[in-house]
Image (tube, rainbow, N blue to C red):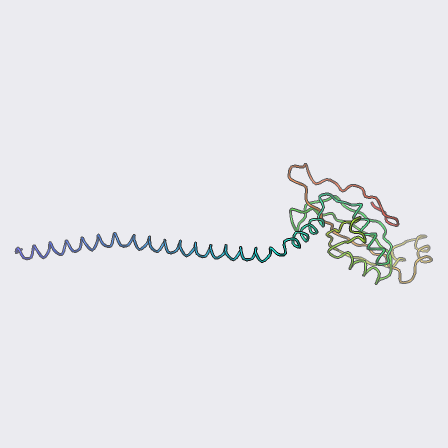
Amino acid sequence: MTRRQELVLAGVAALLVVVAATLLLVRPTKQATAEARADRDAAASESQSLRDQIKALEALKPKEAELKAQAELAKAEFPTSPGLPGLVDALQDAASLAGVDLGTVSPSTPKTSTLNPALAEITTAVEVGGGYFEIQDFLVRLENLVKGTDPGRVAPRSVLVQSVNLASGAEEATGDSAAQAGASTAPDELQGNIVLTVFQLAQSSGTSGTPAAPAASASPGAQVR
């Protein structure tokens, strides 16, 4: 190999070393630059999201008092105890306004709600008597919310109507009671068996369990079982 060939080979080798070194240095730099740009874009997006949230909160600020009042009202719909006396009073008020006779009110023991674990459900069977349209009016008054005629005396309660069964007064009675019912019940008189779900706040985990619903004082015309 001539001296000239040796110099050419040495030059090529040196060039390869320079190229390899350049690639080893440039590639990590490009990767770091790309990562920095991605971080910058993510920070910019998060900053924009925070600015949007701040704008939304500022837009709600003039309605602060109204929103607080709505929150307190919603909280009142879910008491910390079954509150059965107030519930019976509310049912009696609704029955009186609808023109139906409120019979028995049979609440169950509260259990954890299947809709929201923060709530407890009280399945309540209610019996009423009256005409079809009067019972329909009673159901409308019950749907979603029971409101007493006097909010200071009867707090509103969150209620769901689960089922309704209607039958004539004569069908509800048997034997001698059927004859008596036929004599005292109007032809269009119906007996309604309504199942409600009443809500309250669930008990904290520190308690031994959800307490049984206490006995409620019945309003005139209503019986609590």
